[in-house]
Image (spheres, helix red, strand yellow):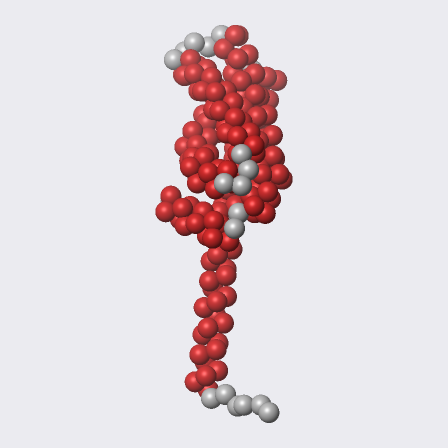
Length: 187
């Protein structure tokens, strides 16, 4: 036998459905792994800018425009992407290490290699800014930029295709919710 609902009950149900839909939409947009992937996409855009600038310098010679694009990419990596790596190191890796130790250790090692190469690139850029512009510096700028590009692209690919799916399989719902809360407090 069916029971007829009052208009009040129908409105309550509609409100609850809307609240739940909004909650799930909010959860989806605040998924920590999706946030990290989105940040990876931003980094890949800046790497393309860096790569095009380096290609321009290697084929057409040094130009102020190419150097400005290199500086723009470097500023992004040094601020936004450094913060990205900090979130992984402080929040994500420790949770994954409760289940396995190898993959987070590999990711940390790759971070160190990337930031070492990035530090070298920053020093070369400072040399150029200080007017130490000669063939060796330009060759170092090109080579070190390519190293940073390669290291970061491979790292992003590994995280997106191996590490993040592993993370989603390993973390419990409680751990994942905790990670989400940590990401929210980090902004």
